[in-house]
Image 1 (cartoon, one colour):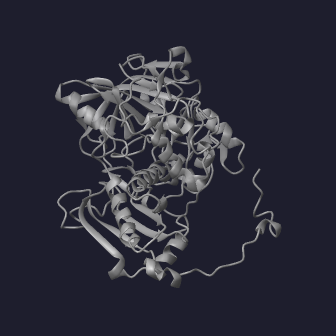
Image 2: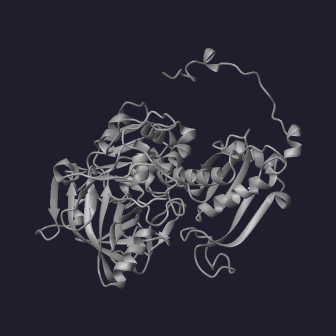
Image 3: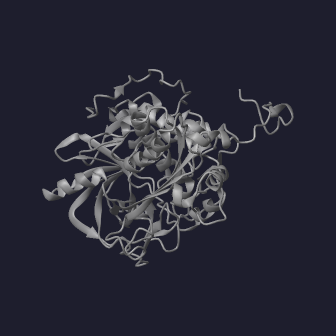
Length: 517
């Protein structure tokens, strides 16, 4: 399908080797991803114990492997499939597929510390999606029409509730695919908060600036519904590639091209059966529907809890009083489908949001300041969105200022970013203790802190409100901060860390340092 893109970006043909030579695994859907994880010790488990999708499933995984900003105790652990879901004999639920960088590395093929670089390369070397026929689309093996007697989303799909105060059951990893009402080939895909409201209706929450919401507003202004597909249970390259933000993926850019770049082959789409839209052909579950014009519902209309669901900053969001409505027209699935979900504040959100954040910052800094920024980590403490650790290698005295310029670029390229910590190349940016060490020994608060007040941030941060900060006029406005924990270039000889002898530790402790094959 046609793809609008900047002419400076190269399109590679499907099957062409990746520029960096990463060993991309033969994964093209969720089931092949699971089969890969089964071969890796400690990365995947299943349970046949019956589990209630209401509160219990998320409660279990909070202990097993949610990690992230989930209230302690938690841990980063294996992905987990629940094979027996109470009330849903034909369904399974998978949680935590990408809830560790090690697992994302195995699923995408780049080393743990190069995942952001891999994402950046995939953004530069895109492969547009292709459309296949229905007989090549496993997502349509089973079809449920919404106008059939007995159709009910609430009994058909085991959408979990994460906590007892959730507004209702949520689809937490539903990739919504929509297009410009005047140009079907201008496609956008994004993950949104989807609450089941009735037998055939979902509410959808749009954070400010989402492209599908711009499509919805355009259709609504004309009095028309916006046809969409909600795709669940996917090749992990698809949802992680879809979580880039503008300006890295500008309006009119189809993020499915990034997934194609990650895999070196196109994502396959198929025509929906009930609406004029595409679906992802190898999805486990597809919900086809329309966002209705001029219809709004309270997110918690069925429960009146006043709450929505746990969000990535670690708090339960407030229920929105007026959200757009998706009227479901059909649901198509694979045989015995796997519903994929996540625990909102967990490490899986960090991977999905954070690795594209790292790539966005890396891309823009390399273009503006070649060779200065060595690596970027979107830290778990910020849910992959609020906190970035930026590692720089200063080459001259002028780079003292350029390092701070890189932080400004990071804040500009990813508007939801709140804090940036700059560190030198001898600091392990993935080790929080090492980063805090740099802050204690290479940072003085009144010299090395830069405040930039009054900038757009994220509406889900509870400190970004007029109640918290009377200086701001609206939610999602904050002061952004740069913490420069780097050594001034002229003083670098005085800040050399203790140098130890380089040895091969596996000779002494092979059980701790296994040789890679």
